[in-house]
Image 1 (cartoon, one colour):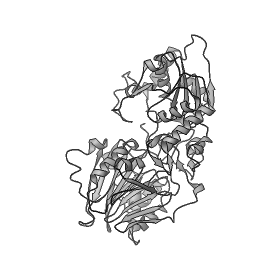
Image 2 (tube, helix red, strand yellow):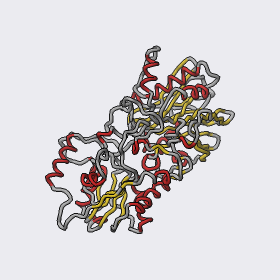
Image 3 (cartoon, helix red, strand yellow):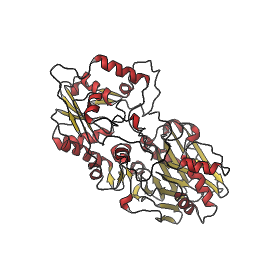
Image 4 (cartoon, helix red, strand yellow):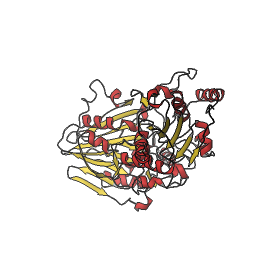
Length: 501
């Protein structure tokens, strides 16, 4: 998938008037380019009775890249009154929500934490997690990463049986079903298993009951979940980077379809919901973009997979150039891989504003400042007079790519060749990644050459579809957003909520 154009001498890539017209369109309706993960989860049970709020807090710091809208922690004392849960949550980053002694008030040796970015359900404090549910058997604290495709159906069923919902997120649907199943089950883990038979979609769960910490992963393994141990404390979390932050030992990944339960007697496992490995469907964007590069997911290095993606791009879409650069942060490793394979020097061309998250307050649309320039600036000295290969993880709508290409040209780059470490997006995602509807995808009904013209690059090349499994050492992955072939029947209505990104 390579498109190359050599402009005539002195020819501008785009007429100024044409650019101004497109700039006006962007200003009128400027969705933020790029993808977002839904959530990160973290659970901990200290069998020595030590408080877990502080380590959960630092674990959430390590997972902050997975969600920057809201966060929360809920804890309980397994030696105290059964069913007493103390929680604190709010809108904002981890260090913004937990201030003024809030951590010190969270006393308990078992707890769950959560960072959120909404792909379904409004961005409000009521939808912040963990959810804490009081019911006839005690309490449940639950944190969830993913999207259910039958959430609306299950919600209506519960509503008609008298359930009153406090949130608009599918996590509450899961919590209700676990609580309902618990009444007729021997223990909480059995209730989780029974609930898993009803819910469909992507989910990695961490559940806290008064005396147990439980982790569960959907049978397809869409979202990551792993187990760690520090001294006599067990941890269940989204990524291994959170374990390393705490100096905890990585034990293993939770298998797709597996339910693990941690009690004072140790760890137990139920794999009755597991399906054959060839049916697994991990989200490939954990490796391309979402996960931190220092994490390992299902035995595969995220950093290593991004290096491979860059190497594959160099093999399949070569071009003569003077410099290879990555769009921070997820494009950097792929750019290094391209450089290693091609022999073209790797360098830094962008300065990223570290104090701007993936979401930030935008001024009125009438203001002319580009949101891209607020986040990213070009090092003129690095690119002036050079032919530049720019690597990014994806092109969604194209509203950012054309601006970055223009920024490089304005800084003096003589040529800008864009390489993308994923195939073109052609279909939406229903499993916890905010790939939007087809009519918002730049690749839908456009050729690679047409996309190249829109973003203004001298050439454009995407990662080939067949390279994706090679990238992750042969693991089974979901390719629905590229092919329209989903691992399960997609919903007939859009259950993903409104997209602000």
